[in-house]
Amino acid sequence: MDEIIFPYELNDGYYAKVKYFGDEFIEYSQRFNFKSDEESLEALCIGIYWYLYGTTALDLNSNIHQALANLAEYRRAFPEDKPFIDELRGKLLTKFLFRPYKKNNEKLTKENLDLLINFLEATGDYIDQIPHFRDFTHDLDDCIGLTKWFCKNSGKYLGEYTSSLEKYLENNGTAHLMEEDVIFYHGHELEYHLNMLGAEIMNRLYRDDYDKRPRKAILLPSCMNANNKRCRAKEERLGHVCTFCNPKCNVYKIAERYPNNEVYIISHESTAFKGARKQDKDELGIIGVTCVLNLISGGWKSKNLSIPPQCVLLEHIACKNHWLNEDIYGEINLDELNLKI
Image (cartoon, rainbow, N blue to C red; front, top):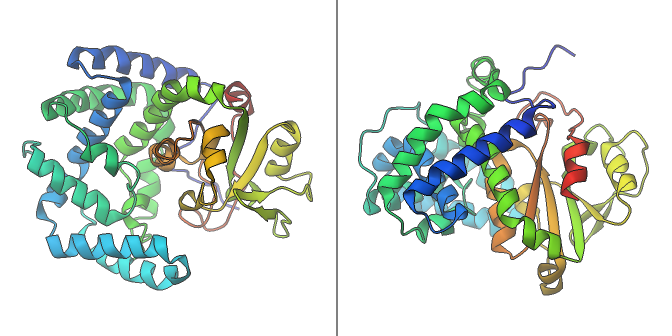
């Protein structure tokens, strides 16, 4: 196999650096009088998305927004129709929403925030963030102030982990055009950094509630057993469960290492928690393992279901669904996972 260029790649120093960045973020955000660190994270997300997607959001036709939003909702309700819906959404997203970054000079007003939410809803990628943005009542100017600080400082702490992103996208510039993940795939470096910081802030926000839960579950993406073509994992209510068929598999190793915890293989972030019952929502705390661009969405998805999360990042992308020509084993920092347990 040729040398793989990853859009992001972590190393042993990552978790220390993102912790320092988290400390600076919380200290800086205090000057804006947010009512909580979660509200400061919401403000930063709004500001970054406005910075990256505001010009496209302002130009988005309301009929196109509604059509794409309806298709995304239909896709979630009827997953058996996913191939047909994805083909149609991919064409519409590429034609109407996929635009090169263009500097946005428009003021972020309540009306423009509504237009930004329409854009995010149309993409289908931010469904779990949107309720937080609809309920946001803080001064929107502070979103911009926080974003300017983030743009100035994120590269100092996190830039080395996305240093290959530009080259990766240049090498794959036409990849995923006319596909439903075209916006997701071509994510800007700032969005990677936003999710990295977001995971750190969420881990702090939800740690106490997580610790109080009597059951702990580790949710692993299917790429962590990607090369096990004859995986015999058994489907259960909350996900697939390892049956220990391959000692070389990373899922096997984690399930064996943590016998007192529930370990589930999740095929896609959208399928997580679909089988959760009230008892699960009352008892479970989860550690979600995922690639960077899914972190904030997955964290708020869990929190919106009253299941307190912790996050551990994949060391690099690993699946051919979005990123590579073939699957490779997904890996994580086991020391970090052990700290989260």
